[in-house]
Image (cartoon, rainbow, N blue to C red):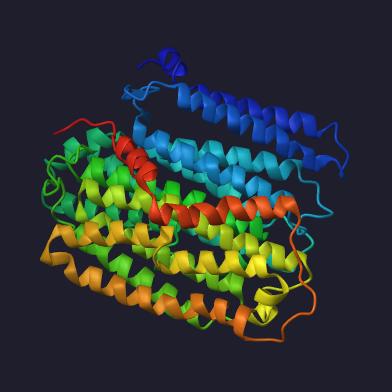
Length: 497
């Protein structure tokens, strides 16, 4: 599709671009104290963007801007997921005291720019576009992680994030350049076609390139061994940004990885023949399975040792990346379906857990487990919703987390006996995670002295808690709307080989 024709299907991104520009201009007229009002401009832009997405014809499956971007239900799903998580994070950011004293106009503008980058990631079917979109997301993430300029931990988080990000970016770019040299193109489907004719030393070169590219994807989703930035950055960044990084960039990281592996290494994204692969020299399903095991195991075992709830949730996010990675080696539509369902469930329970951390800190508490001692009696509503989030993150029925894990394990088991071991390891890790998640519940309700006074959160806080806790329970007993949405979204632009 030509560039001019592509614009007719590019309205959501155009609205988002205008939103960013308007936010920056409007912020110039606000004082430091009024700068936070720009959040409403971004919220309005996001709502209009989602409206534009909803009015687009879902039956259209094509490419945009000279085959650089895909327009398909798969990309639309992730765009809607990104908008939902961003709206929730903006509301959460409005209630945090960490940003007090800082001009927040740029903060919300950067979040909008980050959304634009993630939109490109979800649609990218060209190596250059993949790299550019990842860099847009990464650079805005660096700035947001270090937004608390007067906080040493935030500055340290930003510095470590930049160093690890630059290293990961360089490795990935090296891999992309090798692929371009071998295939003579940066388009996914041209690379797929060229791979059929690789011989001898070219196979080794492509193996090396694939590993380098996988490192770049692993960095975005916080998979072991590309996770080293995660604990320190999550701990030092503003908690609202930590929550955002743990959900939206991780989700779109899986989107671009799924697209790359299925459209370059697989059958073009049609899911017609899961056994069809263009590249047999690298046993990448087994490699992904190993990454899944490493991420689950390390994330859970190290989370047990943490004394900070925020840092524990950081390692927990590594483990959850491992759970989702379990489904990718299946090479099937069911595996991708399971990942997409899990990402929806994970959004609510993980954002909810981080919002509890924000609220407790705003009430004069801290981030250590000791600060949660007796919280269930002092703040019973907070204790109850935190228990819901912990149960859901563990995967205990009847929560949304259980349904998400059920689909993941079902996809792995259905693949056949060759992946039974992966399901067993995943189940063991789920049991291990029960220890540190329930430790939070134990500290809140069974440690400390009962409080004589009960703290009830303000209405605005209560509404956010309900918006996150209710789906974490309801989707555990009635998940049909999510299943239908994901089923309709499991359509990728294809050029079947």
